Structure formats: structure tokens, C-alpha cells
Image (cartoon, rainbow, N blue to C red; front, side, top):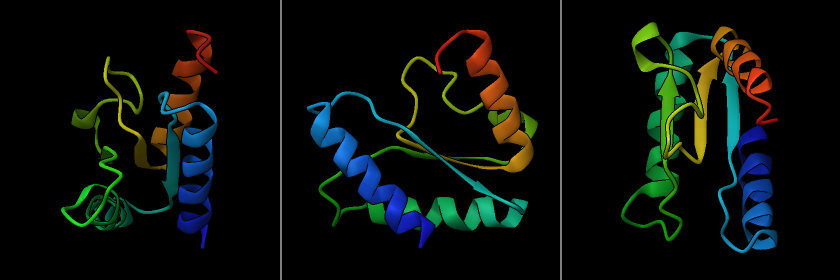
Length: 97
């Protein structure tokens, strides 16, 4: 249910901002769920049948980096609670939220 509400909110935000970069963070409790949700949402939001072509990236280990830290960040980041905390702290430090 949270996924559906998040996608609806992203669609509404994209409509309001006329396509400007709107982003979402999906936080899941387990590492295995990061991989599952990333795979599923990639198929739904950026697959061949999708008109959205949104970028989805999963963050589950140190090599993946931090959500929303790159120059061309993803539309949707899927991560564990620990990664979400680190990402929010980093975004607060640079005053991006």
C-alpha cells in the first residue's frame, strides 16, 4: 500500500512542478527487501511497458553510496533504515531538505 501512495504522490508532485526533479525514499527493514523492491519497482516504473521512465536505485551496502548524493540522482531510492538515516543527515548538512 505504501508503494501505491508513494507513486501517486510522485505523480502529483511531477504534475505540480511540471516535470521538475521530484524524488522519494522508500525505507524497508531488511537488506533482502531492498533488492526485491528495487527489482519490482524498476520493472513497474522504468520497464518497457512504463511511460514514466523513472530511475530506481537500491542502497543496501557501503559500495552503493548514499541516496540522492550524485549529480543526476534517482527518482526513487530504496534503502534500509540505516542508509535512510545517513542520507537524511547528509542532506540536512548541505541544506537540501
